[in-house]
Length: 96
Image 1: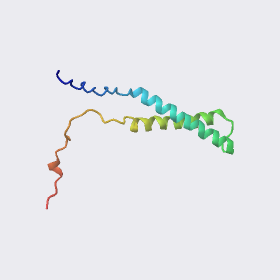
Image 2: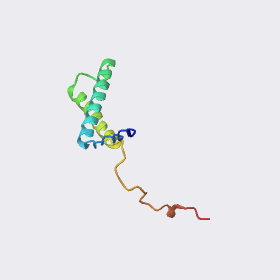
Image 3: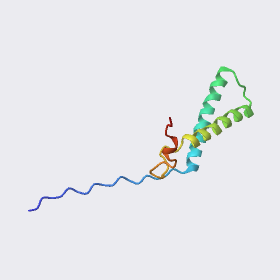
């Protein structure tokens, strides 16, 4: 009897790319949560009043900042690109 060969190795699952709109929405929601927490703390301390426009301004500002942060730092995986750098390294060698 011939020895049994090991089963073929399973290939890693293909990673889906994140939706840009999903990343923006996640940043907006997280920023709004942080803004709400900030407003509640400031309200408890007595720094802001009960005025809704003040709350809306502070929550909206932090939500938009959350969108910016998620846009910049959102994609954790590098984009598929060329294997070699696009700039020739010989241009930056030292010259004596």
